[in-house]
Length: 316
Ligand SMILES: [Fe+2]
Ligand SMILES: [Fe+2]
Image (cartoon, rainbow, N blue to C red):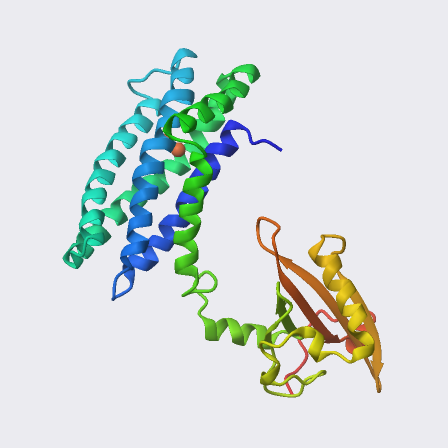
């Protein structure tokens, strides 16, 4: 489905905010960011946020609002334009400092941190005002036909910059975010904490990657329903299953890869315990298959639940 003009511009904001969080993190590190990351950051902020995103607004929505009666002096439009001006001045300083840093002048790191901090704060505040105030106002002031025309006008501004502009810059944004996320798996959780969180789940996890190799399992220490050894890491999953069930594994994986199935589940008895085994395809935001997650859970206790318990039981 194609996006509306508001969704288009708000996706730009969201993408840029992700870039800011990654950049703040990378620049905050004592050793400073890699020159490659700073080069990408410079390209994205100068080339996209300043020269493309702000231009899209200034050449499409803003003039339409002006024509619909919103004054350019005084009022929300004036505030937005003044902020674009301040942002441009900051991004020009950032451009110079980033270029010097990339060329090897590490002494510019402090300046880079300062300018980026100021620029990001200004933009975040500005994005919020647009998302929550200006765009809803525009949606009320402009008729539907006019609004439908904005998408084409936005695409024309993008095309004026070069082929595939949005996709190209989103890819750069993604590279920045991924480079930082490699260090930090998820919103401030470091690897050890994340591993401990997964080991605290009442479910045992195993993960195989898109090439069907075992890459991870949880609950390494302690008693497991299905014991796994570290030696399994890296081996093809077909080698970890008894020959008679390999055809089942093949079938599940090919269904997942083809998008034909969203779960495969089994339950078996192990002595008095009921064991629930499920396989889940893991996909990224774009729907690309990343691998298969196995969850194994002793559900006997859950099966026995009746009535309710709404008070905390005494600790043993
Ligand atoms: Fe703006
Ligand atoms: Fe904007």
